Image (tube, rainbow, N blue to C red; front, side):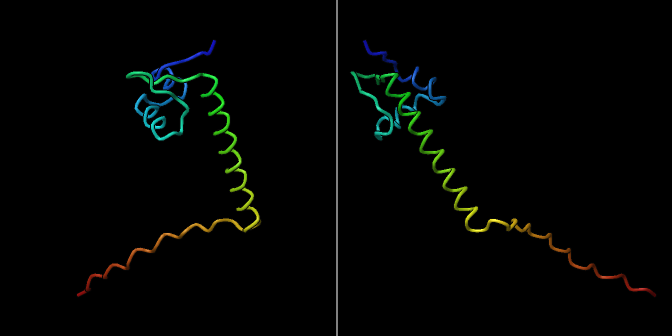
Length: 94
């Protein structure tokens, strides 16, 4: 027997709103099925989706970090200096 959940339960599982779940499902990003007026999700499919997304994002972070280290391994970022305020005119002395 498959463990199915509705859009509200899916939103709680993913930590987002029900509207976000429905939008992602309509776009084809989340695996779900429109059954009547409701969306139905298989919990195992959602967990597999989360695991795959987590792996992809971790790979992107790793490759971004590796590219940054290869480009400039020993160079620190330069902070912009604050501009000096313009000199104020001196009052005329009598």
